[in-house]
Picture 1 (cartoon, rainbow, N blue to C red):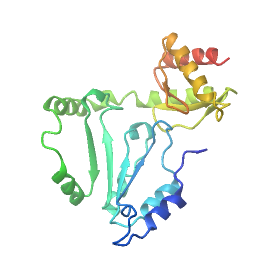
Picture 2 (picture 1 turned 60 degrees about the horizontal axis):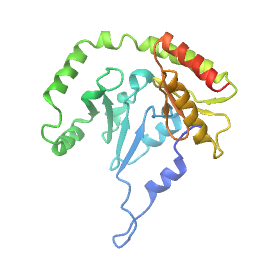
Picture 3 (picture 1 turned 135 degrees about the vertical axis):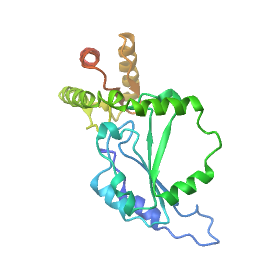
Picture 4 (picture 1 turned 90 degrees about the horizontal axis):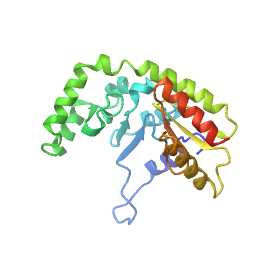
Length: 236
């Protein structure tokens, strides 16, 4: 859990398990689902994890969620031509700010897309949501113009939080930062995180308690400065 990486030995063992026709064990692995980068931990796939995915047999569907790729600035889309069993999922909910419309899309080999089309529900996307997505695409330069500032602010906020001795902070490839209190691992952690979350809320700043840690979304420079000041005061 130190870096939230996939336990590749365990994953490979699951892939290689053999199941006989009379076995009562679960069926062989048919789909591998990964996130690049992940939420709430904000870590992208490592080189070792990507190499492992490349080595999977073609009868296993590999689903790669790239919902935050605009902020990570990394993608595996260029590898799709070599991996017809891969499908990339993306969304308009993050960088394009259309979360309430629930618009997403997939990128994959044409044959795989054709197979997905067969199981797509009819009228699965309201016409209003479709119109909103088209409008967002037509204004993508405006909507995505803030990405460089968000990335720069993320790095500044990450550096400031990492310098605080009471916090354990992980690198981020998304538009949020994942952290824990340095004394995590004991029974008081959840209570402490609840107290921090509530104290921040009382001051007007919402951060997400994810169970074992906190997820802080990167905002404007003014919002980030205010969040940092309030958090430092709360955990002082």
